[in-house]
Length: 268
Image (cartoon, rainbow, N blue to C red; front, side):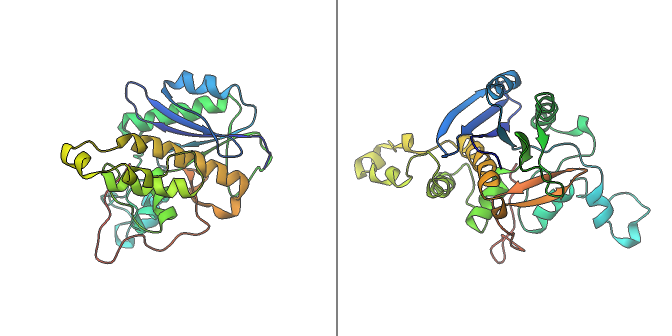
C-alpha cells in the first residue's frame, strides 16, 4: 500500500463528545488523541490526502445473512429464532466465544453509537474514502476505511478473552499488549514501580501510568489500520460485501477464544 499515510482509529460513543479518535503515523508515533463531534473528525481528516480510517462501529444494519445461514432447516418458513438479528461477522465472532453487540436489521432499532457510526461512514464517503474489501482489494487507494472491533482485536492479539475492560487488571493487560506492539503508551510496569505500601494504604495508586480504556480502544483500531497497510497478510476479515467486513489484527483466527468451561461476556 501507499506510504506516508495517516492511520486513524475512531470510536463513536454517542455521548456529549460523540467521537474519540487517535491518529498514528507510518512509524506508529501518536499524532493526536482527541474527542469531538463528527465535524471535528472530518476537519482533521481533510488535512491528510492518504489515510486508512478504522472505525469501531458496524457499517450498516444487518441484511439477514446470519438469519438465513443459521436458521434451522425445520424453521425455514417461520419467524426468526431469537439471537439471529445480527450480522454474519458478529455471528462468526460469537461462535468463537467473542461476544459483541449485535447490529439490528433496522437503523431506528440501533443504539445511538451505532447510528453515529452509520453517519460517519456516509460522511467519509463524501471525502473520497472507500471501503476496504478483501474480495476486491484496492491496495493503492489513497483513502480507505475499515471496520474493526476493539474487544475482538484484543481477543485475537492475546489469544483468549482478556480480563474485563473496566478492571485494573484488564486495563493493564490491554496496555501491555499495545506497548509490546510498539504503540506510544507508557510501559504498564511503571505502574507497579510507583506502588509502595504507604500508597497502597492511602489508596493513592499511580493511575497516571494507566491509559484509559476508551483510549486503548481507539489505539488498537489505529494499530489495525497500520497493520493492514504494512502487513496485510497478518490481518483477517470476517463478514461480507453486503453487510461489511470486520478487520482483525491476526493472520488466522482460533476456533474458540474461551477457556474451557467458561462463557463469554458481552463487550461492545
